[in-house]
Image (cartoon, rainbow, N blue to C red; front, top):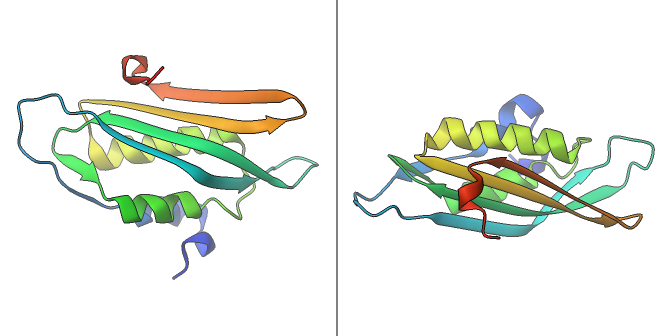
Length: 128
């Protein structure tokens, strides 16, 4: 099945994880992507482009990168706001990974001279 054809309730089913390596170190895992797009749910209706950052300190699970790519692609044809994407993603990653700490950031590409950034979780993991 093509990732972009997934319905809202099936998107998080794409995400997969694997057992985290045992370590006493507080390893921080970071994923960045500029390939997240979704459709504007308002009158404009065109695509919104996002820079995605996920940082977490694993407990028992790690996110599998291919499933993450498919998950990001699953938003491509969905009319949804950045705030809704962020909230959905935060809940999905938190549920899958149950990490010691997690931080998620979405930066929407500038439109009409306005930039928007939405952040969730532990700000101490922010790369800025």
